[in-house]
Image (cartoon, rainbow, N blue to C red):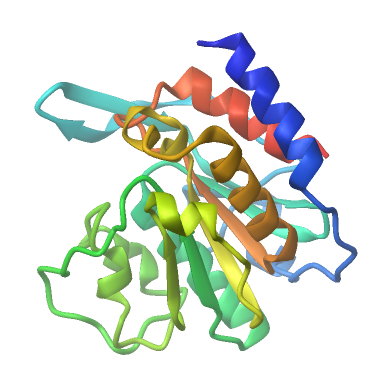
Length: 235
C-alpha cells in the first residue's frame, strides 16, 4: 500500500469535493432492526465496516475472493451512500431509491470497466424490492445494467471509463446516482491520471442524489480500497 498515493488522494479530495445541503432520500422503513426486510445482506449503519465475508463472493482463474460480511447503507453528507462488494449488487440500491422517491434516475458510472456486457438470461420487465434479490443472483458483475434495461429502473448511463471521459468530465445537469467502482484506483485503472480520477469522482459525488461504492474484490487490493473509501466518506 502506497502511503504517498493515499496522501495525494486525500489532498485532491479535499480540493475538489464540495459538501451539499440536501434532504436525504428516506429509506429507514426498509431496515427494521438495521437489516433490510427485502435483502438481508444489506444493513443500515452509522459507519461503514469492512468485516470480510465468511464465504467467497467472487472467483476467477487466480482463485476465490472474499467480500464484505454485509452490504451497507449510511446517510453521509445528506445523501444515502451504499457500500457493496460485487458491482451487480447495485441493483438492490437502485431499486430501493426508485421505490423511495418514485424517480428513475440517470447513472454516472465511474469504473475501470464499462460493465456493458449483454445479459445472458431472460430480462425481467417488472422488478421491485420483493424480487430484486433473486434477480441479482442471475446477473454477472459485467451485465447488470443490461439486465434492467427493460424494467424502467435506470435512465441514461453516463460511463466514465476512459481517460478522455475523466479529463473532460462534467456532472450531468439532470439528477443522477453515482455508481463508483473503487477498482478505478487498482491496476486496471492506471490509464487515468490520479488527479483526473479524483476530480471526476469528487465532482460527481458532490452533485449525486445517492452514491453506490463497489469494492470489487479481485480487481483491487481490499486494504487499499478500504483506505480510499475512508478518505471519501469521513466528512
